[in-house]
Length: 317
Image (cartoon, rainbow, N blue to C red; front, side, top):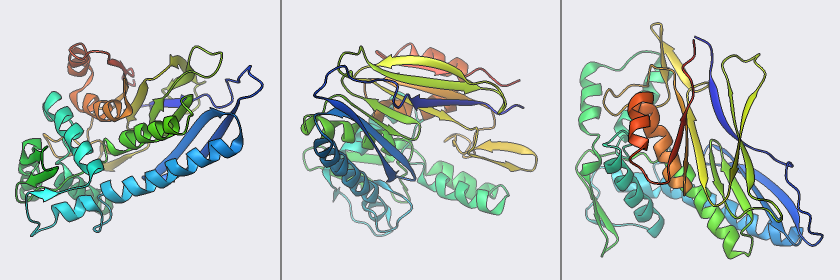
């Protein structure tokens, strides 16, 4: 099969302000195992740099809360054996878990924040190059169910069923992008856009423009000429999930990095999907869920969601 990619790109430098007292400033830096890119319009570089520095500090802070790669993170401490419940947790973690549980219920578990056991098992599978033992896979699947999370809004606390392991990798970057956009607004910079890998959060339109130009790039072979699908977005978000680069081949079968909570394994069908929503937290989670659902089911499901646009890539030949 031919490689296929559906990638969201920000058209850096494509838009300029006609106003003499405001200019565009671009920043980038690492965070959450990807690169965050922030563009904004400001009166001067000092104002833009100050806001961007707060954003990158917040990204680092959120990563230390949400990551499942660091056993000292708040998320992993919450899941460790012997943890006492209900456990009072930080506002960001409570907020994101609430969003994750809502989206898990909405997607009937095709997005599931309790897939941590499956994620850990699949990372081991990729390192060893062989599928996990059936009994371990079944045990991890049985421990994956968003209903194992109980949130107490009044006390800002959470309880987990024993053996539950959380993984917020399918939603945390979108949440961080939304948070950065809020920070830019608090610093008086509403005309901004934040890109975190395949997730893009868009604020107010640039001065004198109807929106930010975002492009979805698709092609089926590396030597194909880029097919750019332009989008003009304002106060919206778009996320793309796909498997062009992140996959592993085991015993002749190509497995995506996107896990199915039902099978516990990476997806084997070639698929990519972009989701446009009001916020990046939602688009991030739904892009993953849509890939797990597949084109037919995902397209039908999207019709039930208000203000959600879904664009699947065509299947490679």
